Length: 512
Ligand code: KIV
Ligand code: ZN
Image (tube, rainbow, N blue to C red):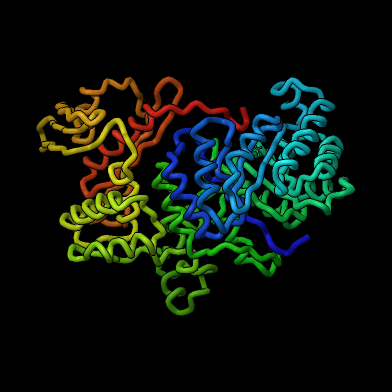
C-alpha cells in the first residue's frame, strides 16, 4: 500500500455523460491540457468504442498528454477493449479501463447474464486487455450493491489475470460513508491477492455524499485511488468533486496522512474552464470553487479574518487559484502580451490564424470594456468563431430596441453554413425578441429548458455569460455565450446550443 492518493479524473468521460455537457474535440483537448497542468495522475479521456468522435478524442488526448496517464473506458468485451487500446496507441502512459456490472439487479435485469457468465466475461476481458497494455483497471459496475462474496471472487480472478487497479463504484449514489468504507475494507480482506492491486473508489452524488463516501473508502477501506470530476460534474447529481476531495485530504493531512500530487493553484482555472465549456454554472456556495467560498460577508468574520486569517479560514484562496481574478490586459496591450497571457493561462491555439482571430476579438472587447480579466480571455478563446471549427451557425451582429411601455424589437444578422441571414422579431423582452429573431430563420423545433445569466467577473462592467439549454428529440445540449451586452451574449449562447444540437452524437452510454 502506498501513502500517496492517486487522483483519477473522469470529467471527460463520466462528467461528459451529464445531459447537455457533451464537448467537442478541441474543448476536450483544452480541458485535458488543464488537467495535466493540475497534475492529475490519470485522465479518463473518454469511451473509445462508444462513437467515432469519442475514439478521435481519446486518440488526440493520448497523443498530446505526457505527464498524466491517459485512460479509455471499455465494456468487458474484446471489440471495446481493442478499440480502447488502438485509441491509446500514441500515449506515453495509457490505461485500459474495462467494466461489467456485478450487482444482482444489473446482472439479471440489464445484462441478462448469470453470475457465472459475468465472472467469466470479467476474467476474459482483463486477460485480453492485459495482452494489449500493462496498466489495466477493472470496475465492477454497481459494485457497492453487489453480493460481497461474489464480488470478492470476481476481484480475485481479475487480479490473477493482471488487473492493476480495482475500482468499486457506488454507481447509483446509494452508499453511506461508514458503510461504504467498511464494505471496501471487508472486500479487500476477502480477496487473497488484494495486495497486488491498487483499490479505487468511484462515488456518485445522488444523496449528496459522493465526497464523504470516497473519503471513507480511502480512510476506512484503504483505497488509494479516487475517481472524481471537476466541479463534481456528472450524470444526475454528479460525481465526487475533485476539488473537494483533494482539498479535504490536503487540509486534513493530520487525519488522512496521504500525499496528493495535485497543483492546487490550478483548481479554480480548471473549474472555470469546465463550467464555461459545458455551461454548467458553479453554485456560489460550492466548496472551494464557488464565488462565495472565500467571501466573508458578516462583520464578525471580516473582523476576525483581518486580525488573524485562520480564525475563519482553513484554506487560502490563492492556494486554490483564486488570485487569477486580476486585471491583466487593457486596450493598449499588444499581440505579444496577449499571446504571452494565453500561454500563462495554458491556452494552446492550434494555428496563427486562431491567435489572430482571438486577438481581434480581444481588441474588440477592449474597446468596449476598460479592464480585461483572465476570465474574459478564457471566455473569448472558447468562442466558436475563434477555434476555427466549422459551425453551422455564426453570430454577426444584433440591433435591438426596448423602452418602457414599448414592445421590444430585435434584428439579428448571423450565418447559416456561411450564408448571411437576417431575422427580425418582437418579443416579451429584448432577449426573447432576439432569440425569436433567430428562430424566424431557423425553425429548430427545440424547446428551451434552461436560461441563465452570470457576471463573469462580478460587477456590471463584467461580461455577461449566458447558458442556454435546448432539448430536441431526446437530445439535450448547452450553449454558452459571453459579451458585455447580455442580449448579444444570449444570442451567441443560443446559436452555440443550436450548433451542438445539429452536430451528430451517436454514442453508447457507459451505464446503458
Ligand atoms: O458509475 C459507474 O459505475 C461507472 C463505471 C462505468 C466505472 O462510471
Ligand atoms: Zn460513474
